[in-house]
Amino acid sequence: MVGKSQIKLIKSLRQKKYREEHGLFIAEGRKCVTELLDSNLKCEAVYADDFGIMKQIAFDCTPVGAAQLKQMSNLKTPAGVLGVFEIPSEIKPLASGIALALDDVRDPGNLGTIIRLCDWFGIPQLVCSVTTADCYNPKVVQATMGSLSRVRISYVDLPQFLANDKRPVWVADMDGENVYESTLPGEFILVMGNEANGISAEVGRLASGILSIPRFGALHKTESLNVATATAVLLSEYRRHHP
Amino acid sequence: MVGKSQIKLIKSLRQKKYREEHGLFIAEGRKCVTELLDSNLKCEAVYADDFGIMKQIAFDCTPVGAAQLKQMSNLKTPAGVLGVFEIPSEIKPLASGIALALDDVRDPGNLGTIIRLCDWFGIPQLVCSVTTADCYNPKVVQATMGSLSRVRISYVDLPQFLANDKRPVWVADMDGENVYESTLPGEFILVMGNEANGISAEVGRLASGILSIPRFGALHKTESLNVATATAVLLSEYRRHHP
Image (tube, rainbow over all chains, first blue to last red; front, top):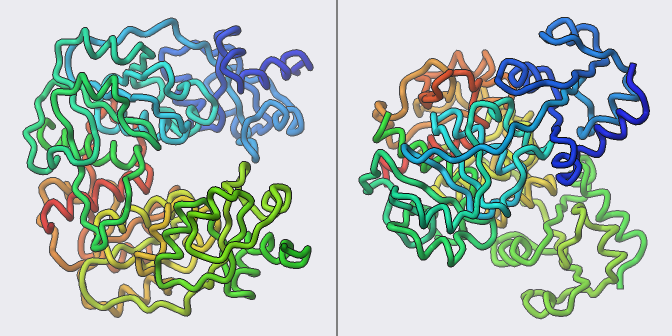
């Protein structure tokens, strides 16, 4: 059973201010909930309207009606199970190794895809500017497909962080060094920029290099690659050099 | 001015059966409409509620009210301008060169991103199974960012097409050849599979090789890359070998 006030609280977690107030976020679907239960994250509750799914979840689920789950859910078609997890306390970035940084990436789908890419390519840390989408936004959580708990995600004053860090800073932008011909260092910070405006002037000033993915289209009209697909290409190139 | 019946017709173009009946599709936003006007596609009408945008469009725009544009628009926030274009007559696949094929890619956002990737990496043709999302779906058109007119897109019986084509067929899947160590031929057909189920058994049987992107995540738990990001990595690898 679940009361009206609990449903109201869960609905409120779609908004960042309520996620911050309660220190909680939601994840939906068997795969996503299972992977988060299997991590270090603390789970507060799991609600399910499907007995088949309930049996597959390693947590004492609260049974709810389909109508109640629909009220709590952030999906058009609820996925049968919804978990409420605690947002971990502030995560500090690591001071060494490879790091991916995001300079104002706004789209939740892009952020979720990028978190999943970090997990796939073994990039242990993601450093986000405070203006980047919130990684506990339900749309981001959904797009990560459970990778959220396996990547160390920090929110920082990005220019200040980059200025104080000893690693070289490379930014992804047009008219830089051809990534296929570059010698990528083993340890560095790769920065991806905003969907419409690219890298900010403040961050650009701190760059030791610019990396570009060459364009091959005959008419050379495509203005840019989507930030998530560009991240895929650059992380793949990094791992080809540093498996 | 625009009449009620015209608004109704434009709204109906969100559905494939009406797009097929009328042979028309819609595109929204200055960039997308401008790029399609600049192509071989025939434009039927352009509606705009913004005088500033209207001046930038090389077409005799029909002025409409914001409320009318909102009724026609497929976007939550209409982008000021909406174009109605003719769907070109059936496009046959080319018989040589590199081709990308999609085996039941269902998500319009993924298809749009993949069309944009083909444009960026100079892949002239995209061959889709009949079950793949419709490239004139407004969500696809929006995600292509204007690349739609620069890639030759065909819908075919994919197993039959692959069986009759002379080029080698490589499918993207788990547990295949490491793409970083493969010698990719200059001419071949690369097939990407469905978001949940990958390559179909029918298409798999026709493959001369399987290409995989190695996974580097420490826990090796990420189940798969999103089909659009995997396409980005594979097309990038192809162009690195065959600029």
